[in-house]
Image (cartoon, rainbow, N blue to C red; front, side, top):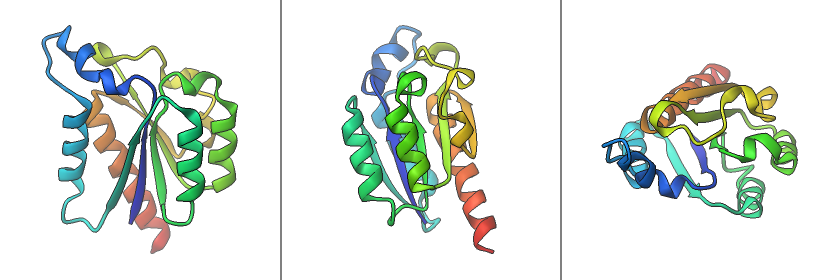
Length: 147
């Protein structure tokens, strides 16, 4: 099973945000936790963090035949980026959208997302747990449709 994980703008600064609350959660720690979470499950992850929408669209288009699904933390893109919405709809892969709550909130919530109607589900939580929950939801869905 192949999963694209797309991490949107400013997630590289997760450690800065978390340090203000006494937490020490960085994007690197989140990604390591994700890789540990899927270890021994026959799941391949391709992870990209970027601020550039064109990189994300290119990644999705180039990997549309490789990927079985997408987990995306769109952050501010969730409000305004109709090109991203169009691309996700065109490739037709199942999508789980990830948002953060409480100390990690990045300014956009599930209810504000223009991508919500294209998603399998939206997940909100602490960054590492929200991404792992997203993987679990997506893999369960993919296993169910392959049976």
